[in-house]
Image (cartoon, rainbow, N blue to C red; front, side, top):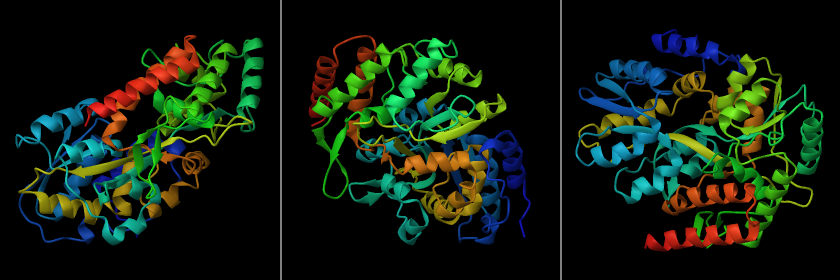
Amino acid sequence: MRRTTKVGAAAASLALLLAACSSGDDTATTDTASSSAPAVTGGELVIWADETRTPVLQPLCEEWATANGVTCTVVQKDYAKVKDDFKTQGPAGKGPDLIVYAHDAIGDLVQSGLITEVDLGAKASEFAEVAVKAMNFEGKSYGMPYAVENIALLTNKELSPECPATMEDLTAAAEAMIADKKSSKGLGLGMQVGTAGDAYHWHPLYTAGGGYIFGTNPDGSYNPQDMGVGGEGSIAAAEKLAALEEAGVVSASQTQDIAKEAFNTGKLAWWITGPWNVTPAVEAGIDLQVCPVPTWADGQTSSPMVGVQAMLLSAFSTENKVIAQTFLNEYVATEAFQDAMYAADPRPPALTASLDKVTSNPIVAGFVEYGKQGIPQPNIVEMAAVWAELGLAEVDVLNGKDPADTMTTRGENITTQIESLG
């Protein structure tokens, strides 16, 4: 029988706002925190989380803490400041025991001595494979994953009943919609760019055009010495991006807000975005389907970057380390916890049992299925040198600069920055 608690009530109320991404299955699946009471008493668990996760995480953690004789405090932080604040306050003894953050920061945090191992052990087999891989850095596991996310092609079924088979098909249809005044020039395909560019949202088309960022080692880990930006594939991808701009399908001026407004008012058929933009589209009355970002007829597979949200254990959590580890292993790694987090923020759960329940929803299933073509977002320190340069390369190309010169220069810049890391 399902156990009704204040945690369940909080998650349920939030779920009403996100019904478009809910499977509708609210049957009991696992024991909640009080069913497994580990031997921890006294002490306080402190967690840093952003404004999206704090409201649901606080009651979840409080319930677990009460059942286990400890206290739990969730401190709301601006997501953009979590890592930097952790770097300064953690060593000073003023930081949290756990931070909620994306896995791509793991390499930086490990090498800075800020987080410590979280061994998934036998539980590893209970998580999606990509989530387990994302926690790995230099052969060790860091963090407890709870959600997996990637972008895909959010599609207005009224304007595009079928998923585009190729980018050529999408381009032709977008040009026709622009000519018929159903879409605006530069907004035939939604793909946020802005003044700094956006390598994350370009990545599916970048790979479809032949580009890659890092090569891989025999064990599957990323090899920062094999830099793809500036290579032939990246130039080919940039040339295809330039062709989209010339056709009036995309533009450098696109931002998420511009694409969102156009999509939710029925003036944009396709939008490369993530599950976080599903609920506003449904509330706007858009009939949705999720499609793969198509490749070019002569192109390679389009690959989104797959991000994994996780709880990372502070290396400075000494007095409360046992409490934190117990919370991670005995509660975060359960269906009760991951179901509730999904209800509040509909990113597919990392735990397979929780994921299986939500993929009955075709929207969720579409993101998950396309994510299987993806690659884990690199969690190595060298990736920091890529984001800005690859984003600016996108802006340069869309603003008419030569694709070959642009990618060569940006690739050289990235290599120089990586070499400076020693």
